[in-house]
Length: 192
Image 1: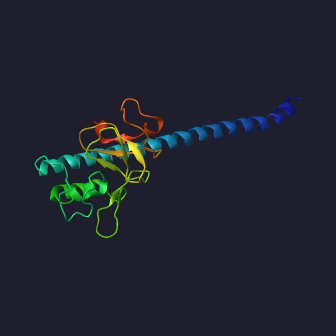
Image 2: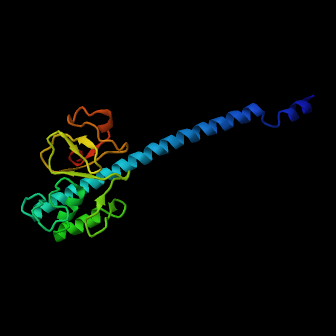
C-alpha cells in the first residue's frame, strides 16, 4: 500500500503548476510596469540635464558678451525679430567661439535636428518636442514653437522649458499650482 501512495505523489498536480505559472506572470507584469516607469524617469532626468546645460551655455554667453543676453540686432540674422525660440538662441550663441563649442557638445545628435538652408536647428526633448527658450515670462499666455498656447510661470530671467512626457504645456502661470497638463513641465530655473 505504501508503494501505491508514493508513486501517485511523484509529480505536481495541475493546480500547483497553474499557481506557479500565475505567480511568475504576475511578477513579470510588475517588473514590466516598473521598467516603464524607470525608463520614463530616465528620460525626464536626461532632459533636466539638457536644460541645465543649456542654461550654462546661456550664462557663458552672457559672460562672453559682458552681461548681455542674446539679442536680435543683427540684420543678417536668419531669425531676426524672433527672440523667444530655441533656433534663435542657438544661432546667437554659435556666433561666439566658446559658446559655439559648448552648444555643439551640449546639444548632441539625439537632441539636435538641423534644418535646411543653413539656418540653425531645433533642439528637441526626449519626446521629440521642441525645447522652448524664453528671455522672460510675465505669466501671460504666449505661443510656443509648435503654435500652441502656453502660460509659462512668471520669471524675469531667460530660461529653457520642456512640456514633459505628456507634451502638453497647460497653465503654469502660478508656479505653485499648475493645472494637470502643466504639472510635468520641466523648467531650467527649477533645477539645482
